[in-house]
Image (cartoon, rainbow, N blue to C red; front, side, top):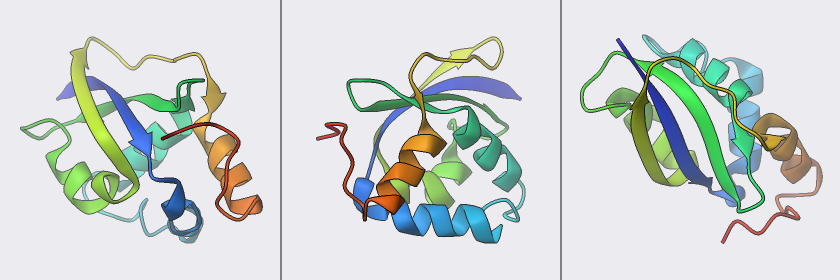
Length: 114
């Protein structure tokens, strides 16, 4: 097991789909890592730069291989990982709050994530 600091750019045009999949439990139900993906997104923040940051526990090599193949690469771009000692909290707007704002506003956010 390893813990990683993850940074990425959210693909805003996927906001409604990601919100739906979080709400219907399909991501959480994914084995073996679905609940950790959900928990990680709950810890995630979006910085003023538009970069999303979170920490995630992973058991695969390379880091987040299964998570990326099944969920993350569909919703995020420019994903980078760095091994860390334990889960961390980061400064910024909670990602879930940002996601909800995007869905409420029809997929257009106020943050510059280009």
